[in-house]
Length: 85
Image: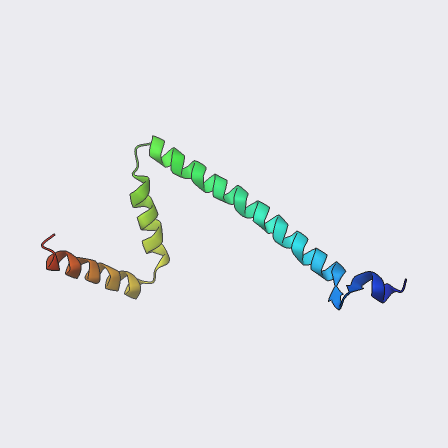
């Protein structure tokens, strides 16, 4: 078996594919661990009396740029007024 046939199966570089798959699997494991850590922090916040739903909203707003945040707040207020809310 030549070196090419060991790593090239059906036109696919098997070693490279395996390497990519294993890297993705490792990152997925890390992502799951981080998600678990985030859940733990939210649980800690809830036990300390904080409103987790509001915290999630704050986190979402902090990710937005100022112009998008202002537009969203303006539209929310506009809709509230339209509904007498």
